[in-house]
Length: 160
Image 1: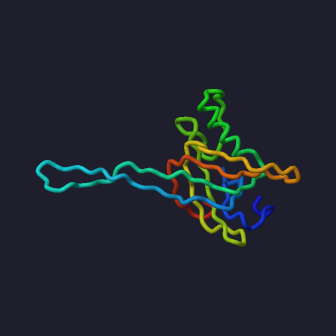
Image 2: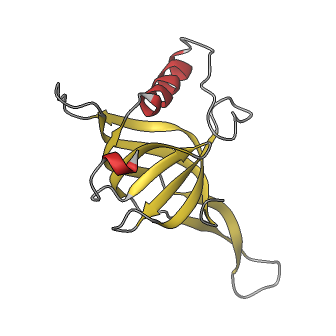
Image 3: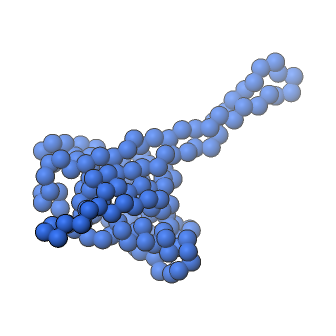
């Protein structure tokens, strides 16, 4: 799919190793560890240890795709919340224990379109989906932005 779009699309979403969409920008992949502070008996100073790990949401913007797969992921989130439908979409890594967990790769490309970096993402659901403007002359679907509620992410080897 990347060859069909201009080189300004520098991030792609891959599910099961297949490119699903390309995007111009991707938010920071960030996480933090909570501090757990406690005072042991008899101690004159506080001690701290690592606590819960939290990962920021990931947002990709200004994207294009040849399918409605990302929209379908959003729709599954809405249906699950409303209790409208028990059907789930099969995505990379299958579904998690709560029937919403999915795995996919965010691949960063260089200006020539070659893979520069790859991060594997585990997410619970699509938190926000903004469909792009309609263009009756275009063959692709425009995705203005998509935000994933992230459980974790990690760098992986290229084409792993």
